[in-house]
Image (cartoon, rainbow, N blue to C red; front, side, top):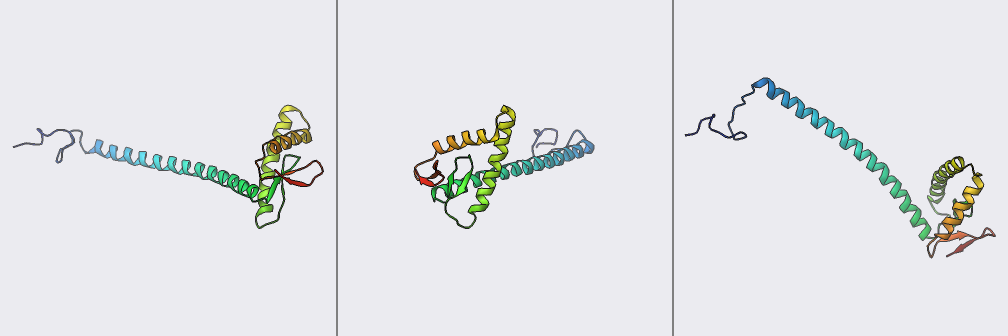
Length: 144
């Protein structure tokens, strides 16, 4: 017959040699670890959520480009090619983000903002995929 002193650690019915006080601390530490884990998980989910919104906005921009609703302008911004619900809000949002970046670049390189925008426009128009609209030098929209 086995007694409690013969049992291996972790077996059912084992008594603690440390006493009740230490067992209680282990419980508190376990709860503390759980609270920290929940906090970290919530923070990571919040960060992931922000990233998802950014990816979602990018997908919407790509969809709008593919549907011929928006096009790349000479000044590095996007413009409305065809009006549809939500297009102007998308254009405003993307252009605001781009302008923040263009201002940062202009400030850090001591270049005129217009020059930074023109370079960005040239680059973005050069990268436009077939079917997307781009602004020509005359200001009209042409499809690649």
